[in-house]
Amino acid sequence: MQNLKMKRFIILNNLKHLPMTLKFLLFLTFLSLSFTIQAQESSSSNSTTSKNSSNSSNLNTSSAFTNTSAFTNFSTSSNSNTSVTNSSTSTNSSAFTNSNTSFSAREKQDVRVSTPGLFDKSKTIYFNLDSLNAQQWSFPLPGAKVISGYGARRHHSGADIKTCAKDTIYCAFDGVVRMSKSYGGYGNLIVVRHANGLETLYSHNYKNFVKVGDQVKAGQPIALTGRTGRATTEHLHFETRINGQHFNPNIIFDLNNNKLREGSVKFVKNGNGVVVKPVKNA
Image 1 (cartoon, rainbow, N blue to C red):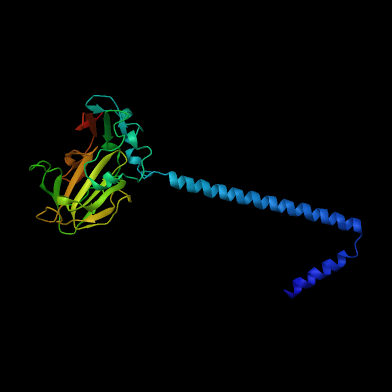
Image 2: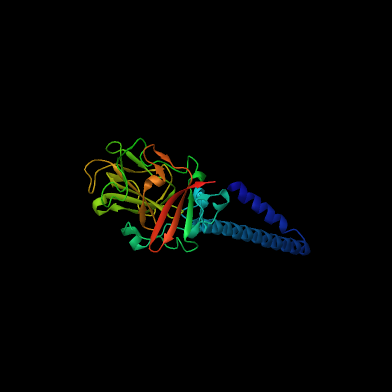
């Protein structure tokens, strides 16, 4: 500090002996240099602000399904053939191009709700199961055995599969949690909406690990098996739904062998309902 003061004193003392013209030229040079530095600092600040603003914008506009590229093959088509060619599984992802984590009050409260805009572009939609790799799907309860199939008894809207008490339940596909709560006979329940409009439901859970709005990945632990609600033994009641309507989950998964089916699934809007059929890929 002492050395700095001494240097300033020497400089100022030397300036006193310079001619007035030279002093004036030095003053102008100093002013010009100051303006240049200020302009550079202002430009740098604006550039940083613009970059941060751009990054913030990208984060805010990213949908809940940014990483769900597996579902870009969930296409709309008016083709009524019973087989699906590779060209028909295009990137027309129906109503879900701009999907986000926002759900209406009813969507957060009720299991059976239609998905806004799902069939706006076409009355027929295909879900190409063959397009999914091993990281893009997961059997919800590995090693499970079916103890009660879909429709095995009146009003049975899913399949009951069992391993042991408090076993880990995994999310079937990437998606966003639409419901996570205690819900009547379902007990502790989770509903996940996927990028293609498909929904999977997991119930009778001992404990839920996720909440509404959470983004979940295929294979992510989301709950533990239990017997909450109307259940006589610890198990997972697993459902698949489209536009609020349940359909046989055995169309998506081979429940007896714990694996994903091959081919595609065809969904056709028919009045207030949806006809669901498995189809072969050409």
